Length: 307
Image (cartoon, rainbow, N blue to C red; front, top):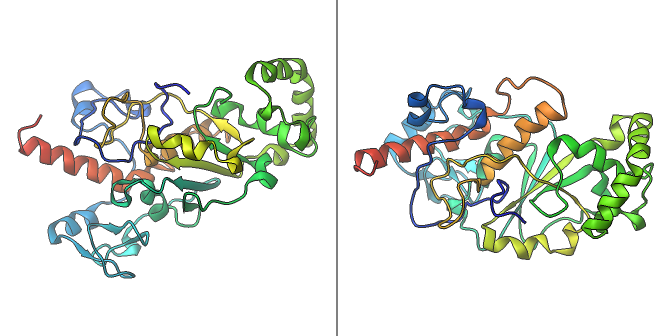
């Protein structure tokens, strides 16, 4: 587990907001001045006018539980009364997403709810330990986590081949359960055969259908990642990026992403590396709430003379 990995999600509260001047590798072509003013400004987002209006009117009731909230209810996963659902963008994802939330993760400070609000048909949030059994479907599921055996997004199809019934490994001889040094030897020895299997079996056998994210701080992660229901799943490590999250974990690198940032970056990489398509902002609206709140907090800090 690498401490400079970008795949640990820091939605837990820390010692107050912290501004990062770099974010989103896709925006690196901006001029330095505009980039530093707002590193999220080049996202192709739906109009945020509805959030501006809601901000001015203040907290509002959740239409389901009647709790007083700002913008959305983080318990019911719905917008509040002053934010009509029809004015919130909906994002269609290329696969399903499960988010496993640590029970001690503060609901109101987690960005996981953003994904459920903006991609309601494709995202499910579970509160640990109430999670599904994944063993029967592990040939089409992966887990975002920087473990010693983690692979990059571009290598997903190659490694999922080992989990298929048509692959060279059966469920009792899955190399994901082998020690790291033995796994390396197996992969080297059978690489040619795997390539042939992938070509002959077609893309359906190696297609990723679900990705799992853990919503917790670094210190909370161990309890979830060691759960027997997650053992044997292919683990994916994201490219290193810098977070824009305002609740950055104290003492941790700024490459620790919030949950919604990690989801967004994974989908961008998946779109380019696996689907082999040009990215044209298809998933940018996943940062609809995040970018608005980033700007809101940044401006508030500026007015308070903290920058």
